[in-house]
Length: 289
Ligand SMILES: Cc1cc2nc3c(=O)[nH]c(=O)nc-3n(C[C@H](O)[C@H](O)[C@H](O)COP(=O)(O)OP(=O)(O)OC[C@H]3O[C@@H](n4cnc5c(N)ncnc54)[C@H](O)[C@@H]3O)c2cc1C
Image (cartoon, rainbow, N blue to C red; front, top):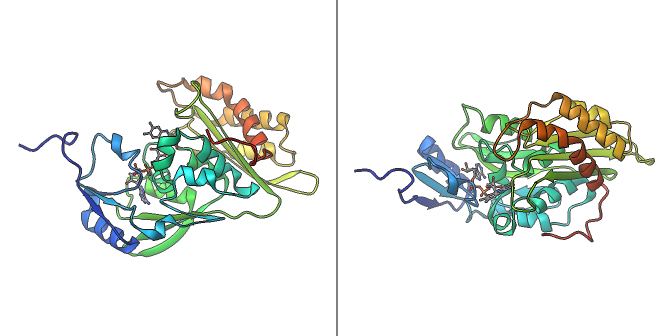
């Protein structure tokens, strides 16, 4: 008799290169999956027949100022000396989950986990207009993170597509920030998360504003209505509150055990105010909790 999936011992193969991992995943098809930090996969009720572990692939580990390998952990991102333009990613990593999880959870797993509305790095990377490098059996390509999310989480996703890295630019004058709301004080999924990026001119007026909201709908997404509300402002409290109201007017919120949808909309302006304030926060004095 075959053991039920939950009792079956997981089988794991360790890949040593991106090509080897992609080749093996292509052979396995839907019966295989990449294994990164395992913090999401370990709770899966229907694990695949074979995991292809990525932790021995040096190429996936690299971290430079605007490029992060897929195996970069939340802890590594939280400790990275990122410039103000990329601060949203650092804050998202620093405030997600709790230390034990952050030490294992990876950027690649955060982007690739399906059905994970609360993934903290996703809204940050959307607001930073990040691109990702993807390796497939047909070769490598670079696409916008929004396009990657649509492809990787769609019904026709390629099971052999491996996320290699994510990159974002950091021009002088750009600021970004992130905020998430939790109700119990640590280790929880966000009820609402907001990431903001904007280019500030010499007088502090914002252009090229990008806003992404996570945890509210089934997937994090950009919010053009909030972007329009912040453009031409100095990202001050009144403008951030108005942008939060603009977002609340157009988002279709989820109800779940953590919070009803109406509550997520009601707190949205306050989370926007905190995200805008994070754009100007001082990295030196803050703590990693
Ligand atoms: C108790 C708990 C609380 C948590 N709270 C939060 C939170 O508040 N915020 C938050 O953001 N996260 C939270 N997480 C962590 C969350 O699981 C991770 O952020 C992340 O989604 C998974 O990263 P991972 O490296 O563990 O991925 P894994 O579990 O290894 O994989 C996740 C998925 O991504 C795929 N995958 C992994 N790497 C790649 C790659 N390079 N290319 C293609 N596919 C890949 C896997 O096949 C799998 O489908 C929490 C986890 C736990 C256990």
